[in-house]
Image (cartoon, rainbow, N blue to C red; front, side, top):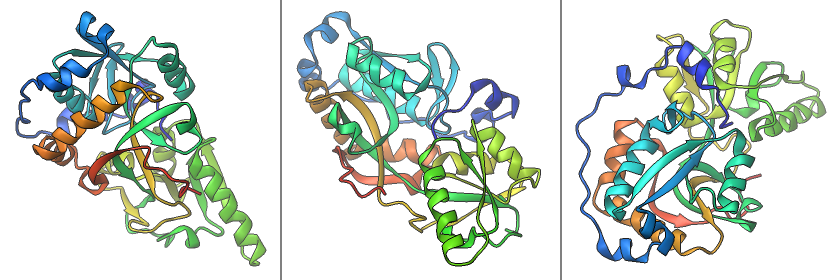
Length: 295
């Protein structure tokens, strides 16, 4: 669900600066103890590179090969101030490229947030700082009456191709037919803007996807769309997302403690509020919080 083409995003006019104007965020003071615990090569270089695989608004809004806006950019800036090193951005294609780049040492980390799943924890550590939910974007007034996964039988549901939401909706379609109800018409798209356009043009009854980006897209839809299914599991367990670092690395320990400081001093809450992500906040950051609850 994370892949999204920057060119399509910009073509849709999703300019965060028009909708998300906020007060100045807190300035961090260098934490010398955290800085001293960074890997020697990072301290010597005075910088790290955080890798991403393209725009994931409102967290990551990639505006160039090495530039970014969004909640992730604000978190990165705060972490850079706190740790006393520059954190640069680099964009690659696909999550596999992100994880391979970290494993090879080309990139030190991915700020993300990236989905934390037990199988991914085998080779990576996740420093989780948000919880995600999967909900529906529907036409204003919800004419198809979709308020949860149980309402999708016989409906046209857009999903991201090969994503976890597609897997869930396929299982739901089978459950519908097993119960003697019409199957779900599953419409798989390669990017989120195309899925949103399908709902706005009434070619789809709903788009089933991550809550955080859907909130962003719905706000940009000029009142054409609304969210439903909020507060329900919708076929998923607890979904945590966070930054990715090499397995069992000291950098992971430093990053976790840096996030704890940003939580404690109010910077995390200020950033999440700025980007209207209060519903995705967690009480405290943690390492590898996914324990197999995601179905």
